[in-house]
Image (tube, rainbow, N blue to C red; front, top):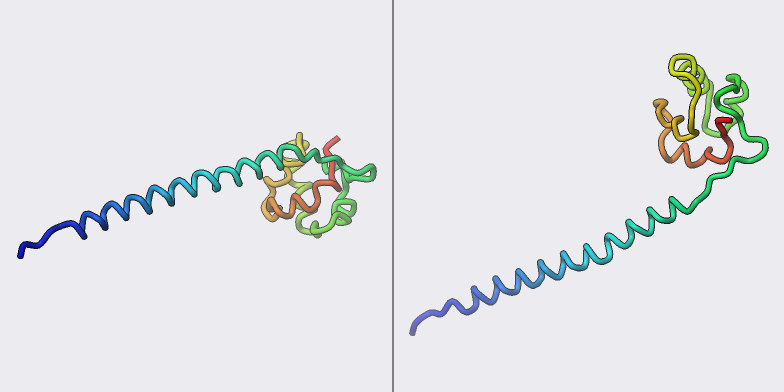
Length: 114
């Protein structure tokens, strides 16, 4: 009896089929989730409340009243303002070490630059 290579070729075709199917699923559903997240982020309009703190003119005591901003971060904000000038956008607050994207999102409605 002679051996055939049929089972080996079947495994190769099966591997390619599973690989193609996996890539198709990831590209179809994975990209859709990312685009939805991006569109949600763009559609959110951040509006500062009427009593939002102006981070360009606030004193250390006023900055410390913002949640998650302690004495050290308030001092770092004032120091950054003195060296680099006023913040043009509230998002520039993330340039300060200790203010992560998550922390910024928590305080976004409580701060303003003008």
